[in-house]
Amino acid sequence: MDLVDLYCDQVYVINEQQVAYEGHPHQLWQQNALLERARLRLPDRLRHGQEVGETYDLVY
Amino acid sequence: MKEMTQLKPLIEVNQFSFDYEQLNEPLISEVSFTINKDETVLLMGSSGSGKSTISLCLNGLYPDAVEGVASGDIFFKGINIKDFEKGELNQNVGIVFQDPESQFCMITVENELAFTLENIETPREEIEPKIDQVLKTIGMVDYKYHNIHELSGGQKQKVALASVLLLDPELIILDEPTANLDPVSSIEFINLIKGLKQETQKSIFIIEHKADDWLDFTDRVLVLNKQGQLIANDTPRSLFTTNKPLVENEGLFIPKTYQKQTLKPQNEGTSKPVEANMVINNLSFNRKKTMILNNINMTLNKGEMVAIVGENGAGKSTLLQLMAGILKPKKGNITFLGEPMQKWKEQKLRQHMGFVFQNPEHQFITDTAYDEVSFGMTLNGYSEDVIKERTEQLLHNFQLSAHKWSNPFALSGGQKRRLSVATMLDETPDLLLFDEPTFGQDAQTTNELMSIVKDLQTKGTTIFL
Image (tube, rainbow over all chains, first blue to last red):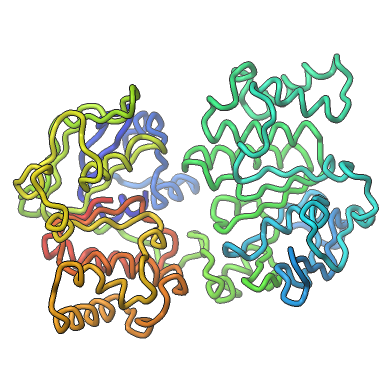
């Protein structure tokens, strides 16, 4: 997931045989319900932020 | 950190060697360490270093079960494990294996757990309450009557853990328990262990080649080198800072928390000319009656890096194989560089599209790095001069010149990965497909590869992960 976060221009999420998301990765990380449904883990950069209680500005 | 002096060893391994054949170059060589009560110890080592073998020696299964040879001693609470009755030690030292399937005997969760309890002669009236209790511990009360084979990998692994917990062992060995789990299930399993650790005072011995997720409750880390010798026995902090080179030399991953560089996203605000390389329309695919992909639409633009993500079994590999023309769609179509996929001739297609396998070793077909890179060009009928020049250039670009006559299998992990990409670049491809690249795991290999990949991107290649 880190590669997706750091380098990809576009990401597709496949869930229940269909495309459940398409767009820039940084917007995907805000979609908690979808991440949970598709069993995706946040990239390292954001996970560690969460663990120590920092907040990241996800508006690009 | 716990006070070492106050702890009495639960396990003491003393100058222990083991091999399946003979002891002159043993698989495990004169290893000594202790595991104390209430301690969490993590054992790292590259594949083939004998990590799993150690765990089977600790619970007394080896050397007898495999007719191996051993020297030195292992003590459990001060008693030599050779002096235990068969089966006695297994109740005190429980193991959860990498592949949960390998340890089930019954069909349903309830029966499996009951079977464990019957084996240790649990009184009949206690069986049901104990099963309910352990299912509560692992958070699977609702799955009591489910068939084990219908559970997810993560759930199976929890059931395997429950079976071990029912024996109430003093030491739990976890042998790469998350190796076959998806990232979310894997972290769920680790959190379950962490919770257990807080509630019970069990000792935990974890075997892993990546320490990251276990670190915040690991007291000590042991490192086994390729010769089966113990080269470190240290706290995580000291090992991954002061003794970092030791870990790196073994090709093991330094946990992200201890890697100096924090990576910054490099994918912000770049606007690229939009020109489609591949268009996928209403694509559906099924195997027998199971729908794998249903009405997928995608557009991959020139010079873009695109990823597909989804849980294990979501159909990612199937989609990649459809895109590479290895599988044919049941419905819908794929257009590559303006031509429908079915019109592409195999050889021509391979010149415009590269496919990098998940495991680089699966790609190697020759005896040297040089032959590996030149193979495609030879097939395409290039002249010898052209082949020689381009092969040398590619090996140089991928920092493999010094290894050109090495056997691909003898290269290091990072070199293998670079070579597997180099072999796809005899022509600058329009589309480069990566099937779950595993190179994101150590910082150096990732950086090396990403700079190569980004260079291709600027030349207009579409990268698909």
